[in-house]
Image 1 (tube, rainbow, N blue to C red):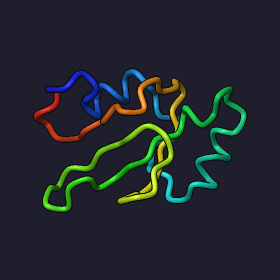
Image 2: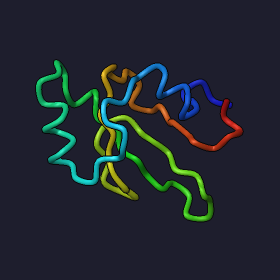
Image 3: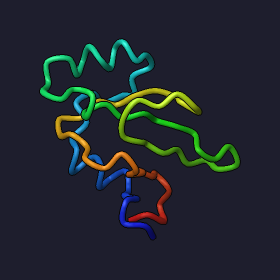
Length: 91
């Protein structure tokens, strides 16, 4: 397993999403993150990286392709190549 892949549970515990549900629109995510220093580093994109899988990924930053929605976290991300997986094999 790569060092930059973490589980969804680990992501929740370390980055602290500030909204319980996925945010559908980028403008809403930007508004929610607006007053946070370095706000862009608190926005994550939920993507469907593999249409043949039931698992989704959360990627740091704003992504366009395969985008399903967004999350905003209290803690900022540092690694743009990080992948958050809800696949139970990443624990």
